[in-house]
Amino acid sequence: MKKKRSKIRVYRIIIVFFLFVSILGIAGSFYFKRASKAVDENSTKNIVVEIPNGSSVPQIADILKEKNLIRDKRVFVQNAKNSEKAEKIKAGKYKLSQNMDNEAIIKKMVDGMVYQDGTKITIPEGSISTDIVNMLVKNKLGDRATFVKLFRNPKAFQSKFSFLKDSRIVTLEGFLYPVTYHFEKGITEKEIFERMLSEFEKNYNKSVKSIADKNKYNFYDTVIMASIVEKETVKDEDRGLVAGVFYNRLAKKMRLQSDAVLQYGLPERKSRVLYKDLKVETPYNLYLHDGLPPTPIANPGIKSLIAAASPEKSDYLYFVTGTDNKNYYSKTYEEHMVYAKKYHKELDALEGKDSSKSSSDSSTSSTNSSNNEQ
Image (cartoon, rainbow, N blue to C red; front, side):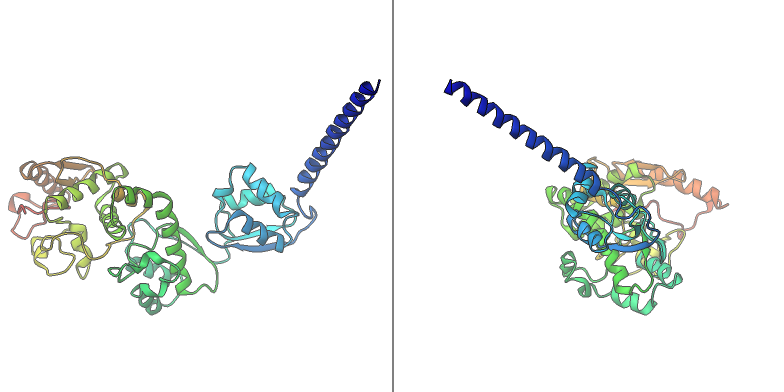
């Protein structure tokens, strides 16, 4: 009899326990659902918040809670994780309201719907610093002299960006990441460059660093090579192969002979590089100097950075970009010259010139080598 009563007592305890757990679960679910809702569905007031670069979801929750835009920080963090979009939230300034629930707030930040109370600037891939500064000054985002001074002083940014501590880095060329920016009113010249450097660091660390480290490529050399690939390539599918051509030439102690690099060192850009330009003494004349140029020649995009860190393997040593924007690759100088002459004939025809009367001062034969094999 006692055993029977004991069993009944155990069953009761188990039933009570499960009832208690169920009630807790229901209550928790109710609270979670309620805490995910808008703080005030009837609110018409807009609140501007700024999410700094590199903010974690808990840090974002702190910012939103401080502005009374969410009910519960832990619930917001869980909402973000459940949506599998936590890593996609973008930094920036957002116009939010207490009438928005957690899902709406998260979506706005994932979509990057930043509050555009300032100026929108798009930096094209392959832009050089001069073009970027011109664009910033034209949009009244700062003083030219201040931009130039900061550009030539990487040390001013080393405390925030340790990758600039390489002694060879003497300007910010190569690190002003090409993307669309929204600059708020009152932003300083230094803060603008810091925003660009932050974008470079984020994208490099996310998509390039591990590849470059695995292939044992030096960081600065990778950026320099990426800038060359950016300026020498028209189509995305050619980036890896073009990088491979230049690495092959370096491995064989051949000069890179890049017209794009040469152009960077000339006083002004030319539509066609002429033979007389090959004699101009500049560190960027890789017809005269071995190895890579001393600095990047542009600000490369992520595809060129990846290509420089992971070049496509081949036996090619030359290439010509035709008038059809297609690359023609060669393993030998003789084969290369066939493509080069064909390219110049087509180019002369487009410019209305007689290729049979080309002078000794005509343009060079390709984007990476002259008629004189070296």
